Length: 116
Image 1: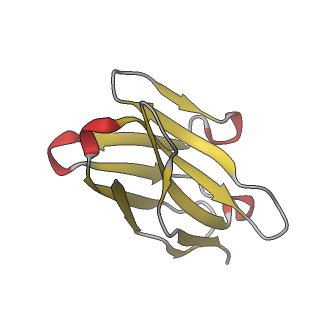
Image 2: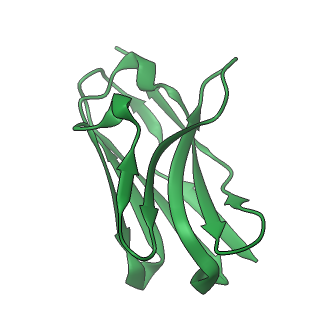
């Protein structure tokens, strides 16, 4: 079992920056991939960025060059540093952990609102 807790959401102006954190606890050694997803009202939950336990990072095209995903293994925490934020980045952001086998885990979500 893995428990995920996100933090760092909030209100930010267009062009601003925000950093999200997600800390995992429990059987963290079983996690193969950790990722950030986002979902806005009326839309599906989409992948934003993911980082692989054995190396490698992916980003969705819309955030490339603006967002950076990173990991602090000692703290079992991943981060999503978001820059040059746009109103269309407004969404609930969810932390996701995929184990090497079995069902994935989700955090409770943290709201990001980009507005002037």
